[in-house]
Length: 64
Image (tube, rainbow, N blue to C red):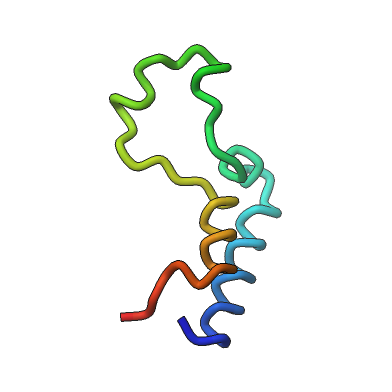
């Protein structure tokens, strides 16, 4: 991913995390602590905005 696109993605993620509902999506669900034992069976590819932001920062995603 080129630098301008990376900056745009970073700004978008930060904007989403600042919203009042963003707190619910900012970090991974601690399903064990919450007693959600079916979570891994139901949610095959869990994702949160914190993980996305980290991956964008490390250039994990490529532009096709």
